[in-house]
Image (cartoon, rainbow, N blue to C red):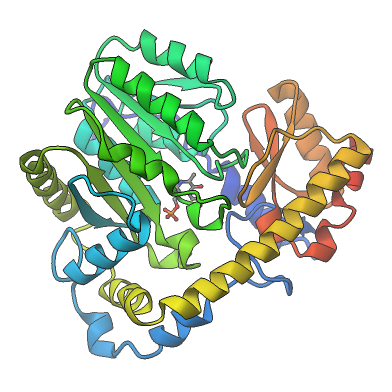
Length: 388
Ligand SMILES: Cc1ncc(COP(=O)(O)O)c(C=O)c1O
């Protein structure tokens, strides 16, 4: 008996992240550097006052109601698009609401790719790209995010439609961010391919990056017709709204008729998959963006400062003790360089035995500084180096 469809990946699904998270939570002495969420200095999940004070005003009827349409409430879609794009994009664009950044990435893959098509994403990256690719029976190839020539070679090697994922700024897990000049080179390369190209920009952590992180969006005002730019945005990170499951997929293209077609596909996909999203969550974020934006921005600035103090301290101390990290620009995580995955597995286990919980990534160990207080970060690089 089989019951499930022919082309299903039947390997046992093991969520390596959630199992370490569980172990970390059960250890009263544990340093829990596993979570992909921002925590405050008291060790509690960081929440925005401007977001959660407004949420209290949502009525039971608003909570109980279905959202206005599968592609999301119009007010939310407009507000989140303005929030994400700011005034950078004057090319044509449309957007749909999605269950987090995950839903946006899933929708992009589902709408643009057939089984057997290929996607290209960073060799050290968020594990869920691979899970989604496997779920949709896609081929995968990877590139070194520090080496644009490697990326360009990989692009040249794809024989047909290109579907490229770029997770910048604040790449998970490396914390790498492309400069505007690098973005320019990436765009030029994509244009020079003279082929159908879908560029999916995963900007889940962009609100925590420094140095005008949205400047690259202006590059998409001048693109050829064979380039479709998709932006996957996450309210989980931007508003500490992880469990509420909202985000957005924004499509930028020269042709409004194509975008209308794309939005139609999006609506059908949403209806057939999650039907619609939390009405209350969309109403709340719309209210925050329209009427409490300044308060939110002030809190966001404080959150960014809190995070930067942690990453600055860890990186300085890592340099002092000779703990080798991948090059970091911004973001929630830093990653310790590992020669190979066998060494990584041994060392990761050793850290657990010494009550330090981290996440294994390809040729590295991710330390979620977003979830540790400055006091806990102080000296942690040295402790890790000693155990090495
Ligand atoms: C790189 C990256 N992209 C997207 C997401 C999506 O997050 P969510 O679905 O919670 O918005 C995450 C979450 O951890 C992430 O790390």
